[in-house]
Amino acid sequence: MDVRFYARLMNTTSRNATSSTAGPAAGTAVNPLLDAYALPRLTLPNRVVMAPMTRLRADRRAVPRPVMAEYYAQRAGAGLIVSEGIAPSPTGQQYLNQPGLFTEEQVEAWRRVTDAVHAAGGRIFAQIMHAGRNGHPANRQDGGVPLAPSAVRAPGPLHTLDGKVDSVVPRAMTTAEVRQAVTDHADAARAAIRAGFDGVEVHGANSYLPHQFLADNTNLRTDRYGGDTAGRIRFAVEVTEAVADAVGAERMGLRIAPGNPQFGMVERDPAPVYRELLAAVDPLGLAYLHVTDDPAYPALDDLRPRWSGTLVGNTGEHEETTPESAARLVADGRTDLVSVGRPYISNPDAVERIAAGIPWARIREKNFHYISGPRGYVDYPPAATAG
Figure 1 (cartoon, rainbow, N blue to C red):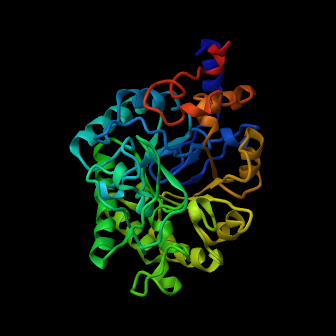
Figure 2 (tube, helix red, strand yellow):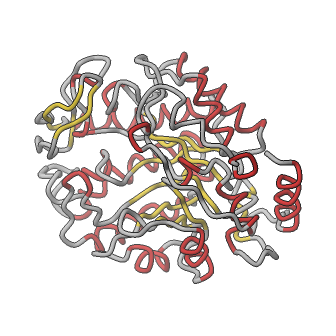
């Protein structure tokens, strides 16, 4: 990175630094994205969150490879990084090359990643992601059939190392297996803290296991984890409580995507379900709630007044995130922090570009999102050296 460019960024950041311990900081930057923000345990130098994105650079033992430390350290200028989805157990794996947090070898490898991010001045949460019905025997170390709230098959083919294959009908979880999944989330959260993460985010969105319990078409249960709204939210609430108890609520975020139809999810009337979910977990005092918006249900607007803590907003698939649209979300008071996904693939210096008024670069080779090597991963240069 060019020294003058870096100095300009640091001058902007230092003007917005805060010593407060809770709530938004009183920044002075013209662009609200460059204002500092104080979480319960972390002061963020800006309001841009690098969203979790599956990149599949772990090995077949779900151990992070060294290139992952380089990738995340390159993006340490984000106010907060949320890692790609990490499997909490072999049962929760979606892909063989998806990283895990269920062996000590994985914990030690993640420690190298978090050390690199911290050495570069960054902050990073681990996203805990249980695949549920999105798994496949070919993508699990134990070769097992995926578990889900109900035996409802995911639509469409799934990616494996041998190419696309048909999805399989998952096995409906027993009550004991539901409780084990809660325990697995809490155990993975403890492992994340041992690995040096600053906190954890539970993935309750985008068709993953907590979302499968919340949705109409994937939860056909008639026991205490299904049926009415109280039953549908029970798993998500129990996971949130267990993780908060394991690592502290102030170290935990929860991601939701009300009404998101991704991967065949159906939620006919998400508002009452998510309002009740927030009423149950808001008193815990989480570090943040991460909400993906959807045109069918404007969750950011509906849930913002129902959440007393920090809100991280994401516009979802229906609207491309730009520096301008992200800044509007904060300026309009719809969210405190903004999560940015795909632009971070091709812009390791996304915040630095905002500070310098440099446009975000486009992704040049989409086919290299999900391979094992450095191409399309760590070879996007910062703006200062792109020419």
